[in-house]
Length: 268
Length: 251
Image (cartoon, rainbow over all chains, first blue to last red; front, top):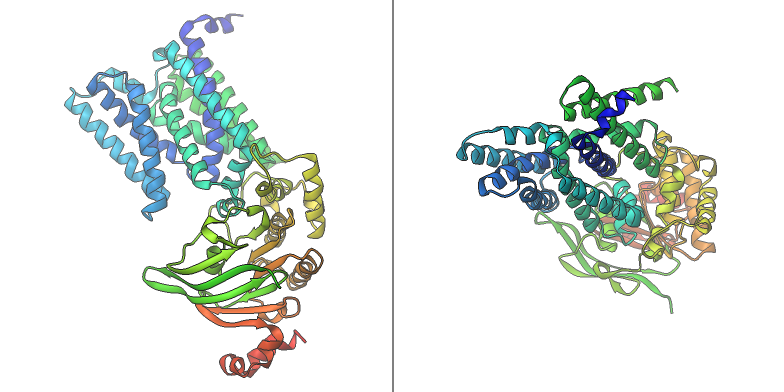
């Protein structure tokens, strides 16, 4: 029973609940992003989050809530850049991402340099997860799940073959917009759990793991969600047990799941 | 009075100040089976995408089922097989059955769900293309030819009135190609579907299609194969031997 004592700590409970819901949203969105070769959008948007957080700190707002609209706007910017400006999506992500970091660094240096607070945003700090963060994480994940439930067929069609989806009367541009906005909000919330530097892994790893064994699109959603949630619980537990950074532990556990599934697939 | 399915009037499409389609005028009638032929870069796929309203011409008007193509909304009337999928990932985790089901979405209202009744239609399309045994297979594990047949099943599963197939047979071996052309002929004759089939296989298509549309940025020829074979103008344009290849197999 001693092993489970850690669950009695309030900060651990908050970390696990918020982490599981965010992992759920990340895994579901990640499946679509990876299949559409947009894996790095999470990386780009998390860098923009850095700029947004620094901006929030300079103006004295609670950084995470200031970052959400900034990141949403940038995600739409990436989409429009790649659609209209004849720029490849990876280049668009690169532009917006470096601009986010540059803005963050300038603002951080003007406001007295990097402090502990900003550092915790870079690498995640489960001690800093508030009750409100937990509520918002649950709310955002539920929205992602509801959207997926009602628009599953449209999302599948656009993810598999956008041109065909358009010829089926599906508004691919709207589906894309919904996808990047949901990703933007989820990325900002994921920052609290694993930090800016590791957010994209939370999107990519469960998705890639699921592709090793999934035999249908629906199956890949379910498997990725299961792996994402299990990695958060295991990662937080390991970090508590060995006194290691929780964000990094979650990512390493995710990677180990990927390796296991890869070997399982190779043996079959 | 034959029903006009597609009416193109003076269509010009331009990319970077170069005309890729120039002043096209043609009408596709209900029940036509058209072989759309031309060399690489002749504008075949651009024409297909203009018909579907994905590309807006700089001049002229394109009407599909009586509607301006960019405002066309009755997508359940159209079955489409794109030339290639720009974002297609070979490791996409999806089954053959799931992909064919996508062809039924144009008939559905929100929330779009696949029902048990739909499964019967999916099975029928898979049987028509002789791939029913692949139903549960992962799409990524199939050969290119098999994948192309799955995508063709997706295009016909909802029994569209107009079927647009952009180079569907490139990955097929000759035997399967002929059977595919023949299947489309049945679909055309028995279901009354109007078909536009883009192909490089100018030698075989004449055996099955009723009309030939030869494109090279402008229309070189549009009419029945008989008219094509008897045309002196076409003999001069293609040379007697090329014309013979197209016509020989047709006879």
